[in-house]
Length: 75
Image (cartoon, rainbow, N blue to C red; front, top):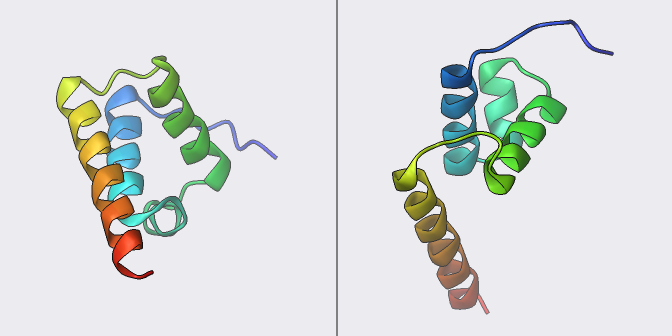
């Protein structure tokens, strides 16, 4: 059920950055927001509805690359 809270874009951007760094579940607990809200914001970044700037795209690609590299080391 929606509580009707509205968050500005700067808050959403910081929340998405946090989710990308520490994971969505941990970010939702630390920020006190719903999992569905942060999932929607992350999706909006991926499809271009929430602009995080060029540096974020590079950060996201680097993060994915490092996660794949870590996963391959564990095999």
